[in-house]
Structure formats: C-alpha cells, structure tokens
Length: 516
Image 1 (cartoon, rainbow, N blue to C red):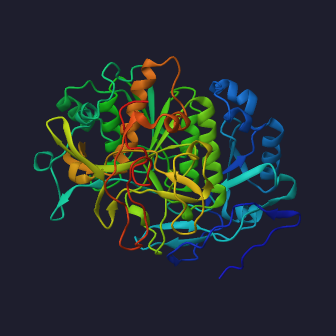
Image 2 (tube, rainbow, N blue to C red; image 1 turned 120 degrees about the horizontal axis):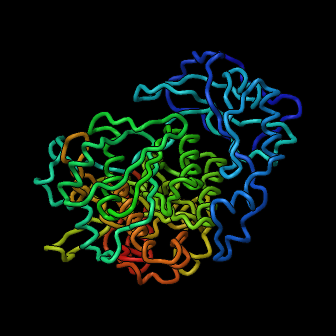
Image 3 (cartoon, rainbow, N blue to C red; image 1 turned 120 degrees about the vertical axis):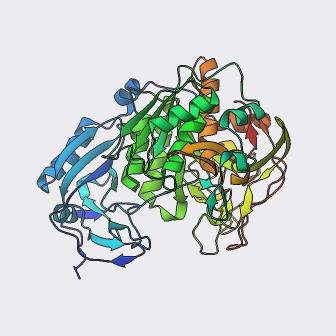
C-alpha cells in the first residue's frame, strides 16, 4: 500500500478540495508513469459581483478584457507547472483555465495527493483520490480549483426510456408526443423558430448518427437542423447502442431541433468527470465561434456528492454566462427527493441547485387532441419521479425571497429552491425519438431542459438581445407559467420530500412556461 503524500514545504490545503474516497475496490495498480491532463481553475482578473447586480451585459471579447484571468496569474501557475515537470497544454484567460499534462508521480508531488486505481460496482476502472489537494502558499489565492486528478464518473444522464415488460416501447404503442406537438400543446410562440440562435448541448457520453437525425426530422417534415459536434478534453461523438447514453444525446438534439428548427445546435462532448463537465461548460459559455445563446444540460448528480471546489467553480462559470447573456437550462433530476443517494435524506441535484441556472422539473401530461386535460407532478414509481427540493449548500437567492420557498426538510436550512419551471417528463407521456435505428419513447427531466432551451431560442429570435439569466424576471412575473398543483416527489426510501401547491413549489417550480 502506498503511503499517503503530505504537503511539501510551503504548501497549503486548497480550500474546498476535500474529496471522499471512491466507492469500490481499490486496485492500487496505478502506473507512476501514466500521463494525463489536469485543469487548474484560476481566479478572475477582477470580480464580476457588482455587474451581476445590474442588467449590464458584455460580449465574449469584452469579458476577456475586463474579467479574464491576468497574464501574471496564469504565468505563476505555468511556472509552478514547469518546476514540477508538468507541461502546459493550454492557458485560457476567458475560461480561467490552465491545462497541464504530466505523469502520475509528478502530479502527486506537485499537489500533495495520493492517486490509486479503483473499480466500481459496474466494473468501470478509474483514477481516484481522497482527502485534500495542496498548492504552494503563493498560489493559494490564485488557484480556485484543480480538476482531473480524480477521474471517477461525475454525473448521470436524466432520461428514462419507456419500457413494457423490460422491452423498449415503440412510438405506436404509447401515449407519447413528438417534441413539436408538445410545443403546440404548451402554446409556445408560433412566430419564431429560433432562427439565428445557437443552442449549446452538454454531453458526457454517447453520440448521434446523422442518418438517424435525417430519418427523424424527415418523419416530422421538419428541415434537418445544423448539428455540430465539438470535442472537449478528447471526447468524441461516439454512438453505440440504443440502451447507452446515446438515448440522452439523441433526446437532447431531437427535442431541441424539433421545437426550434431554425436554430443551429452545437453539441459539446466531454468525458464524464468533474474536469470534463466543467471544461465543457466553460468551452460552451465562452465559444466565440458558435456563440450559443442558451445551453441545455441534462446531466447531474446530488449536490452532496460534489466537492466544494466543484460547486463553486461550476457556479462561477454560470455567473459568467449570466453576464454574457447566455441562458443555462438544467435537468432537475429523475429519482424524486432521494436523487439516487439512498441515505434516508432528501437531496437536490447539481448543477440544478446553482442559483444561476434555470432548473427544469417534470410533469405527467394528459391531453385530448391538443387540449390539456390533466397535468400533475411526474411521480411514476419509487425511482422514477421529478427531482426538486432545497439546497443545503447555496443560500436562498434574492429572486426567491418572496416565493415562499420552504426550509430544507433535512436541516431547516434556508437554501436555493429547485426547480424553477417544469414540463412533460413522465416516460408514460414521453417524447417520440429515434436512437440508433430504433423508434423509442423517452422521458425524464432530460427532455425538459432542451425543451425549455428551445423555447428560449424561439423567444430570443424575437428580442433585441438574448434573454440570458431570466430567473429574476421569471420570479417577478410568474404568470408566464401555468401552475401545477397536484402531486409530490416524496420517495419511499426517504419519506422526505416536497408536495405541489398553488404558487411556487419544490416539485415543478412555477409550473409550465409558454414564453418568457
């Protein structure tokens, strides 16, 4: 067994870096000469907090000049890397990131960590660590996070495939909808298609096949949207089988493309690690080529399973998005109030618990023709229900002060309430999609994030400037949503959770939007 490394002389603990040991079998076979990349998050050149309290916005180019990491800070990190036999892959002031490449033993020495190989219950092997990361004292205020030393899976996709007797349900065998039909039922603005907008989609696995997209949109009699795959940290568009993360990727693209057919779609593929997830977000937010005005994220996990540095750095990236006028739509979770933790407590999903995203919960929809006859909280089964609740880590934001957000059912903490809005998510009333040559029905809050993102793209087309961070205006004018007042997300494993009510609630937020 290797001895745990401690901090070298002059090193200090990096705030928020404490990480629990991975669950699974420790293999202890990590080759000290294995080479990998790490992303170092560097502080901004100056604070944006005062700007966030105004309606001011900046362009991506202006952001770099005003708030990008300083050349001095980036050089300090680069010099530290060279002193520890680490090479600099890239240095990006807009994304506040320095990417380093090096060997296991050099990263262990540089950051005072002990890395090992692990294998989880699914047979996946990964590099893991526990405890704290250490940095030189003179970099303590410069470095805000170090990502990639540990590459255990960070998130899960929030989609559920409709099944009957263990078999996939085909389109004709269910009370399901095409995404464009959902848009009609929800009375999305008819005068816009999202023309001139770009919808960014974050994916941490899977892929799409152009042949499937052509077939799908032809069946809807909708022109094939422009879809571009963008590689982040070496990840690629890698389709495999219909029961893989391909279901998430195709759901996201097909919902967004069917609801906002005039928009282009940029899909950012990244590894499913905290490093990959963060790098995908910052790449999309600061993408000066595709310039997405709205980003859809259908991956996440319980906020308690993230380190403080992860929550803080993701939230910081979302703050930057708000200043740039980029809306972020996230899936609120698909496992009810438990959020797949299983410790008897209620949990909310992250990144949906960030105060700077528009968190999207789920409903079950019933219609006659295109008229809604019933819409209630999605709660199909113990492990199939909308996420939602109250954060244990993020304070109640100003825009929720008058929304009657309850205190946490766990601790009584007055935290950020999740979600903000909702839409059809129950697989029983799910979305008709095509995945790897199969016509399937898929639900989950994974469908709601791209649905709402496409709605925002439609609205953006009609505005002089993008909606951007819309939470303050939404909470000031909740009549934009149709209230959902029946149902709950209380899972049997916890017996804790939240119930729908008139007004905002921690199951469906303000309800189903028809515009913003």
